[in-house]
Length: 216
Image (tube, rainbow, N blue to C red; front, side):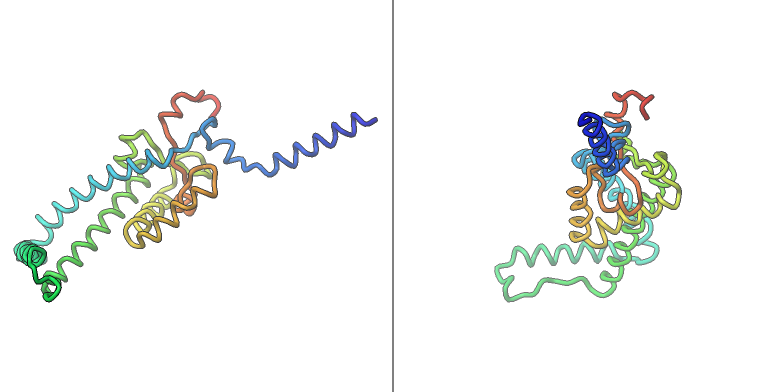
């Protein structure tokens, strides 16, 4: 009599244990169908994107846009740079305040900064929304998918994700970055804060290629 009872209890225990397991944790792990990318390779992909977008945006803003909207900005910026260099090399730095940009240069720099942020948001938003990858992710063989459909994120989700990434890394650093990264400590799927908020995850296609596709 004791054996059937013990088997029933064991079965009930297995059911309760399985109920506590998030199905997504079974899919998004190194041995699962869709292995999530590690933080190191994601950081490398972001660094590649950052360098690329910064270089392109700087050329467009300083060579094309600012000369049209704020003529003379580049010359004023060079003069301010020389003032900063002279101040830094001076032995009287404690007596002389740090040189500040003039009013026109300050307005131009703020405008350039806004354009830079807009460029980053458009890049990440459109890349994620249209292709589910950025150039950096493509180079590192990473891909963004929806945790709801397990496919490419919907267009609106991609736009929201791009906005969250821009906010985390550029609008509210370092608090936003720390908060987003800290979520890695509380989930097994290696989702950062902006991943959780947009219900997406970044998977590593290098590991995926070694997994039986039939298990997906």
